Length: 290
Ligand SMILES: [Fe+2]
Image 1 (tube, rainbow, N blue to C red):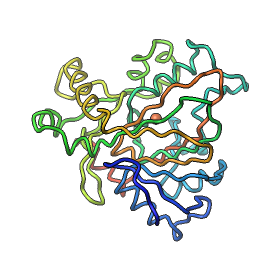
Image 2: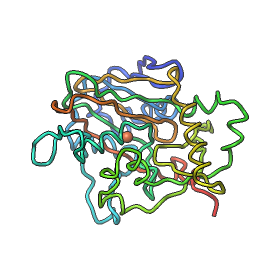
Image 3: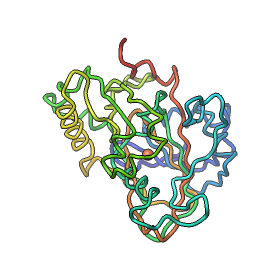
Image 4: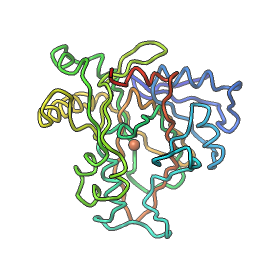
């Protein structure tokens, strides 16, 4: 595969691939290897529809279903968008959807608040605003490798507590008051998630993390904030400015990301699915010892 680096520490663009044609025996092995090594993959000029996007995602594993009993539901495409179900745009600064988008603009890892953490997010740009709307990424593997030992020693071996309501409360009580949020009790995951195929460690943190087991929550939150600040220093950030047809895949085990604002009077819609992590993806390596 022909690739071009996106950032000096992580991320590659992969050229000359039509993701509609990738199967388990045609291209997936190479793409998966690049995913394990580079944490963020970029493919341009793609033409995925819902069905081909979901089919490509299933090569990585089961598509995440955010329902209490996922086995009773079909996986569907979700849109990261200010277009509402009634086809109007959420333009009001205080609207619930804009609040959700603002929460998305905190540095985070997807789905750490679910009982089944995500391996990857696969996103495709469908409708873009005239300005803004970038997604920014950092490698928590690179940042962890660089981190001074005095900071590393304070988090190594620790377990973080995550809750969806926590990240929403950081934006507004409106965003935290949705019924959806009450569905998910807090989760706990190891602070470090080693990659099962080559062993490289990465910090597994998110805006959803609100505490560290064995510490008072205010102290834990201060440590999480300090770690996040270290990982998101400007020299670690890759900012992706979308063109329609761009597809990005990122490794939730080794990155954090955040959305950037755009003029909400203009539609901006990204099609997004998460893939749930399984045994082969190292789920047992992030699950705290009983
Ligand atoms: Fe996200």
